[in-house]
Image (cartoon, rainbow, N blue to C red; front, side):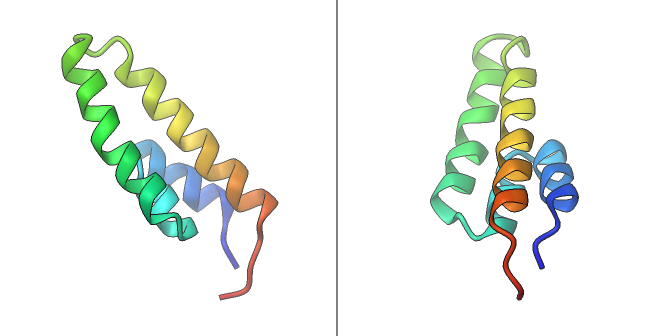
Length: 69
């Protein structure tokens, strides 16, 4: 089963990895590309926002769509 805590933590450490864990390849690639752009473009200010949003969306999806693997 998908564990929401693992999905959230994976995406908190490296944004997009939690989405890949959930099976959303394009969403994971999106967060892997966008988050470093925001870190560099805003001097780190919006990078934290991307980290939190990525972790929350990975956690929320995993908790709503539990599937046996």
